[in-house]
Length: 201
Image 1 (cartoon, rainbow, N blue to C red):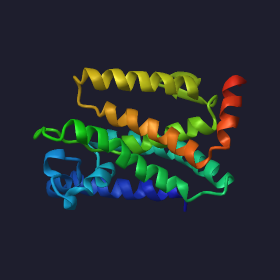
Image 2: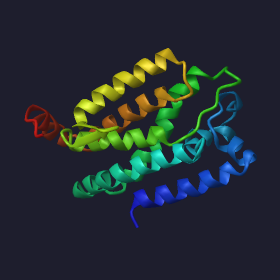
Image 3: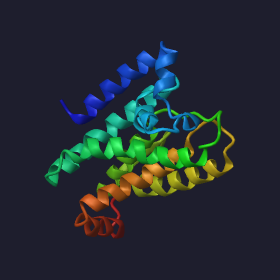
């Protein structure tokens, strides 16, 4: 069984459990004001295994499955298949840190969802294959173009801050995924640049 499928199954089970158990939900979500001691730091990771509703869960898991299988294959090709779960789990944590710092004294702020980890996987996939088509709603576009638009939109919406979506987590998860993949496969950086310079549509 692939790492991607294992993560999807575990996330679905935990999320479904939390849908019907408010106490469990409160114990797992990212709640900066409650995180004054190391015993609460598990929230940096566990918040990525719970979701607000079924649509939130479906969208994240569908995206993870679609791109995760490809990223697993890429890591296997360079002889480092174990890096996939590290990328995903570390991506959840890394994407949680900036919102935590920003809202540390905000008693009302709470966050949940796998979006940061999913963004890490998505941008890892774009690193390996920057010109692969990604469909945004119904519009297909090269991954590298999508990446630029995604980062710009996430940064803008995070600064605007007038909705209930963790755009900051999306932004930093994406950045983390790209940097992580480069650091663990630096020789591929040359291939990435060559691919950028030689578009394939």
